[in-house]
Every structure is written in C-alpha cells, then in structure tokens.
Length: 325
Image 1 (tube, rainbow, N blue to C red):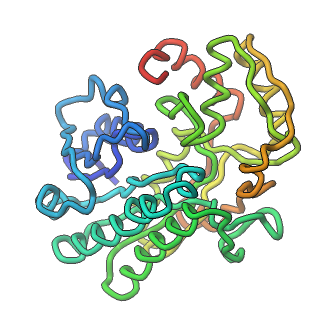
Image 2 (image 1 turned 180 degrees about the vertical axis):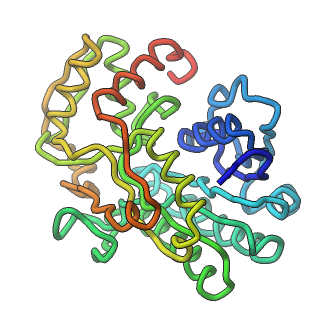
C-alpha cells in the first residue's frame, strides 16, 4: 500500500505507540490527524511529536467528543484507535474512570465511525492482559479470557465492541492484542505504562532497580516492529473482523532481561525482591504469545533483537530524559 497523501487518524497519537506511528506515517507522506486529550497522567507527552512535519495536525479532544472530531474521522481512509488508559493499578483504584476511558469512549467512537465513515479501515490496539494467568504456553487467540484486573475487562469489552461492529455493521475493523511494547517515547517516569520504563529510568540515572520475582517469562515487542505490524494489519483486508496476538522478541525471564539491560547500558544495577502483595494479585506470571495466526494473515514478522532494541531505547533517553522524567 502506498501511504502518500492517505488521510489517516491516530487516536492517542501523543502517547508512546501513537506518536511513533504518527511520525512513521508522516515520513511515508500520509496526511495524519492526531486526536488526543493530552492527559499527561495517561501517557500524552507534547515532546513526542515535537518537530513533526506539516502533514501532521492535532485535535485536542476526547475520542467520544463527536463535534470536535467528526470531520476528521469522517474523512479518514485509515483509523488507528490507540487511545486508552493502560495502568492496571489505576484501574483497580479508579474503576469508573477506567470504564469511561476504555469502554464508554470507545463505544461512542465506534458509533461515530459507523455513522460517518463505515468504509474506513479501523485498527484497534488491544492487549494480552485479559487472558489472565496462562493455562498453557504459548498463548493463542483461543485461550480462555480471565482478566486479572479492571483494565483488562474494559479493554476486552472495547475489543469486543470493535469486532461486533465489524460483524453487525460491516466496519472494517481488526484488533491486535499487544504484549510488552518498548522503545523510544515510552513512559519512564513511573510504572503506569510498563515496568520496563522504570527500569530504563534507573539505568540512565546509573541507579538500581528492583526485579520482582525474576523467574517470570515475558516476550517483548520493539516499537518499530509493532509499527510494521499495525501497518500490515491495515494493508491486509483478510484480517478484517479478527483479533490477533502480536509478539516479538523471543521470551526471556525478567532476571535475564535485567542482566541484558545492565550489560547493554554499561551501568546501573538491580536487586531481586519478592513480589509486592498488591501487585502479585494482578500479575499474570509467565506469558509468551503465539502470534502465528497474525504472521500468516499479514505476512509480518519482527526484525529487532531484544538487546538492539534496548540499546536504541537507552540511547534515546540519554539524550532526551529531561522530557520524560
């Protein structure tokens, strides 16, 4: 697919994944409209799109605010719906706020798309979190759903809305269930987005971070590989109406991840600790994605080695840490 001059909407485009996608699309010549409420506590960071080219414009609005975004949504050929709240702990502390941000707003947005632009290609960023503690590994899309937290329940509902609208109303929607995504522009000031961000912050400050447990296996997706997955999903009509896992680097234990990060950084350190009780209740333990269905359907595969991705990420924050801490 040629993206030059294609009108694209990216919701949540000031966040980690969204901003990387926006910059990539802009580089391909697409005309990109970013829709973002600019809530710093949920990941929006103006620096993420500083210096963006003229083919990027921002609408500061909620995805449920029809009057502010209707024209842009109605004129888009492709919509990447990445807006949402991702903090698992915040969802447990403020469940109604999470409901509003991840469920109600998405339903309002889908109604807007259905009325104004049902022919648009629509990609929704979902999550592997709602599988809960895996009953088997690697986890495929047939795995039972048993979300360990409020956020997962609401994200699964939002994904289900997208797929329902595809079945009933013919929306050309695809959902990608993401695992641990990392790379430049991720949130590192705290663990609201991912624990890996906090680790990176300590490393660039030459400090020490905590590894809780350490034996848990996880897989990670470097941001450049995820961007190629998002574009591949949009370009392949055979993925319409489906939800797919997206993995990435081969799985590692958290302890091995910590060792690799310190080795790549050349400084910093870590201490192994017992899992905090309040986090243990919602931790899923080991997780490894079986993303063979998506690889086959979209012709996609990741290209970035874990150590290389960490090196690029650490280099970015050594240059720009002030904008993220």
